[in-house]
Length: 328
Image 1 (cartoon, rainbow, N blue to C red):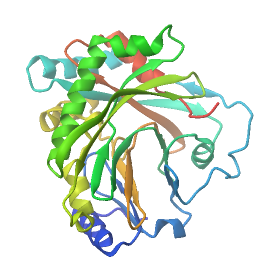
Image 2 (cartoon, rainbow, N blue to C red; image 1 turned 135 degrees about the horizontal axis):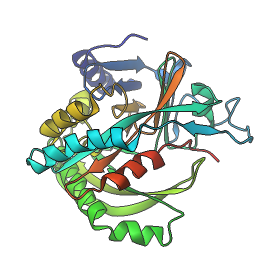
Image 3 (tube, helix red, strand yellow; image 1 turned 180 degrees about the horizontal axis):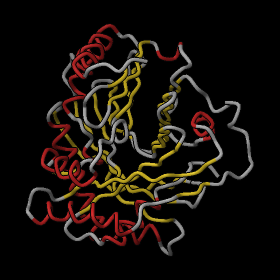
Image 4 (cartoon, rainbow, N blue to C red; image 1 turned 180 degrees about the vertical axis):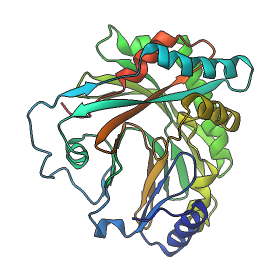
């Protein structure tokens, strides 16, 4: 499968939207390029599921295996993480950002192949690109249907094993401030492509079952109305909002510059976006909960939001807590 330029990807999305032709798109975080598949349910090379739509059901050859799967993580040291954290904190203190989503790459050992992980995963958004990565994302980017666009930014994670976990995460002042920031950012992003923007749900809780422990995730829903000719501009709409606010920060441009310096290597497709248009509606997800394979070594990518009030010890714990397989 050949990677194409952003301009070509955008043009093909616009054309297919205007014609009502189903397609799958995948775009990287740096917006250097991506993949486009027309009528993707007719092929089995790239596997995907966007909520109920996709080309791979849960009855894959591995989906009913019940044996326990071991996951060994070999994380970077706290000291190495702290160096990255300090770069971000300097940017925050200088006023160049007020929220930045710092990510790391963690070597892991797991007995399953990437397609086996895909089939066993229990997640609303799944994607497998052969020879590259598997993703089992819980986070919608945008949904476009019947002239309306909605987004569900996810900010705030806590172990469900913590006593009074839901009350604790909702009362946490740092997490609350971070969530307000992301919701405001996404309201602005939607305002660039839609009108009558409103917050339809604020800080609702999802419980995610994993191979290590259950975790609670905090999300909100923001929505607006699109112009009547929106199907012919699906590519324009999506790319106007990229990179996704929840995995970059605010303000976007200066924050991504800080993150590029702190993380020291491109993210690639991690924290990019993928989506499926069925001919009428488009649904998409942020490429988080992501395992890539490079020369036989698997890596789990994870991250978390950093603010001026962040504690590096807690942030380090959070990025490791997000390393899991979405099945039990």
